[in-house]
Image (cartoon, rainbow, N blue to C red):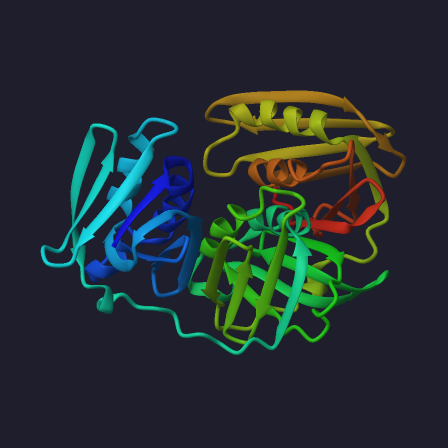
Length: 372
């Protein structure tokens, strides 16, 4: 195999590949990227056995063929080459060496047999639909902060993507929760997604998917089966196993009748929480919200480090209420607000609090209070 390829195209393809491979693994071939050159394209394939990414890039293919090299090492080499460089990859099958040349730089990398590289078996997908990158980005970006990191509750270690009923009709919905906070984000149901099985997309896959979603107008083809999910652009295909488990009935924890309504500027609120939380104890990170007529006082009282208080002008017309939250959870939820105002709906100091963005009900967040 011998190919010449622009550094920018090579870096984009190899950076996606190297982020999928596990740094430490007991199977050496899983640290490699499979490079296959044919026609006018070269494909780069990487896998950790749960996720597979295939990236296609245009290249001058002088001699077709395939080989595997260390994904991390190749990425580091390409990253350090000068912008605009033309990179030549030359695989000599007799010596198990790939030579990487660019200008006056030359590197020789060891290869492993391409026959040993595991290719994820193709799957029959029960649903395939197309959705704009900006829609998918919103669904996953606004929900992923609530993914659980507890290994024991593995079925919460991802984003639950499914078709759901809403007040506006059927929607494509993403939900994540760790038991302390919950995010539920809706988007218009794409044509072809009506019969889609609900799947839990793992945390790592959500992170890898984010790299495909930077171009707003890009169309992403989504294919879903009971065991796999695939996201594809013309150049990149990301295939992942889904989490084998049942996502809990999240609708039961979303409060339906929280009568006390607080409206506050989201940016001002987040900054105030961040400031008063400076003196909170590392363990509890507790912030108390005290609400009265059009007034909100945020306070922290940490015996070890001190106290802090800040007052904000808000829209609040209900009875006086004091409620405590983990500052980190409040900050994460407030940072999701794209609109100017955040609307908090309370019931009592011991019940879950609901938050949404202004009058928009397509994004709903729930946070559990804590004793302060």
